[in-house]
Image (cartoon, rainbow, N blue to C red; front, side, top):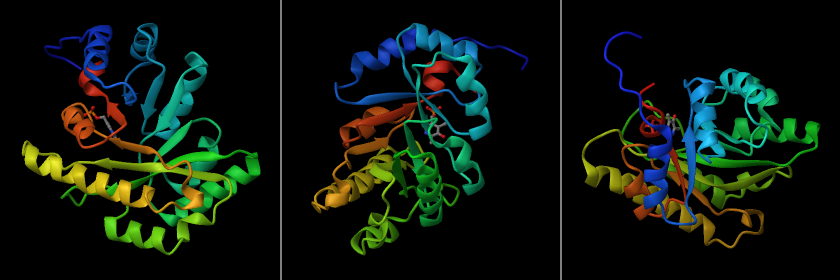
Length: 227
Ligand SMILES: *Cc1c(COP(=O)(O)O)cnc(C)c1O
């Protein structure tokens, strides 16, 4: 990269988020496309939870960074990459199809582990974002199609708001995901005993997400600088 580049102070950025973050809300430091030196710097400032969106990149970073880092996978996951991910991350936040759940179940059984996942729900007014449509997800839940897995724990929902400056629109997107989250949670379904995570909010919109009920936020560029 050339041109003007102002490095951010990672420690200060983390502190300023934690200063405002209500207790009980987890911060995932999104380190995709960031060099390991910057991740180490965040680690040295006390951050232990990081998010990556590409399997290959994550697998290269894991062995060269401290082993007590907790990783979340947050990117679109192809079924042929599931095998190498199982057992390496504490949460797959971006599950967006039943087929993917089937593969995660099979690979988790093979490895003898339980895999925690979030279901990604598409609430943004953009074609490009992955995820279940809210109606589709509700139907899958109501028909108990998602309750047949033994080695998967569905921990909650992940959502991204529309990429816009229209805060009312962003708020509505988050409210839609939050509404679906509580509707599912309140079913009292035995298979959803662990359903308690609502991951939404990024650098530009996380305070709004928290206001709408998020208890996991995923912040990248604000902490590490532009990618
Ligand atoms: C990149 C990414 C983020 C972080 O976005 P920033 O705007 O850099 O904070 C959060 N969630 C997902 C799914 C991402 O891919």
